[in-house]
Amino acid sequence: MKKEYRKIIEHSPVIAAVNDFESMAKALTCDSPIIFILFGDICNIAEIVEKVKNAQKLAVVHIDQITGLASKEAAVDFIQQQVGADGIISSKPALIKYASKLSLFTVLRFFVTDSHGLAHIERQLQIMKPDMIEILPVLMPKILSQVCNMVRIPVVTGGLICDKEDVTSILASGVSCVSSTSEDIWFL
Image (cartoon, rainbow, N blue to C red; front, side):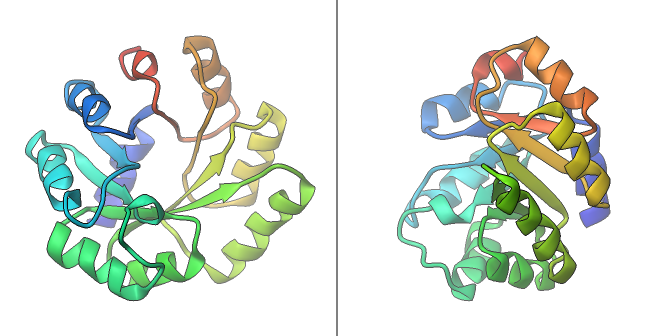
């Protein structure tokens, strides 16, 4: 199943990332076959995922941003067993490692603001095997190209993407896709 998810992502230049119910409703009508869910709490995350899946889209939950969940393996169990998400996003390697064992699709999120952050990616990927990495905020195309050459998994990037020109230049650097909360980007 993970191979199918990877193919879907590699053929989707834009991933809709949603941070509230209103943006989610719009994302359900866009062409993106996957939605990054960046909001919710333990009381409503199952409902959010259900709506995404009912729209025939993959639901990937940013587990770090779900109110009421701790950074524990039990949170991953909850997302898989009770919520039914297809995968998780996290900046916490231990959660990604555990989710991989459960066969959830995994996106390890990195915040890269300097050369130390860039080196951190390589160190983490020597011990971790996420299905995809996400780099935030969007970096210079030259640095994104360097990251893409460093790893053997799809790279998604997001943050501060404003228009079609941004998407085009970012994709030209070698990343698989961009994630964006900008509804204008979803409907390019």
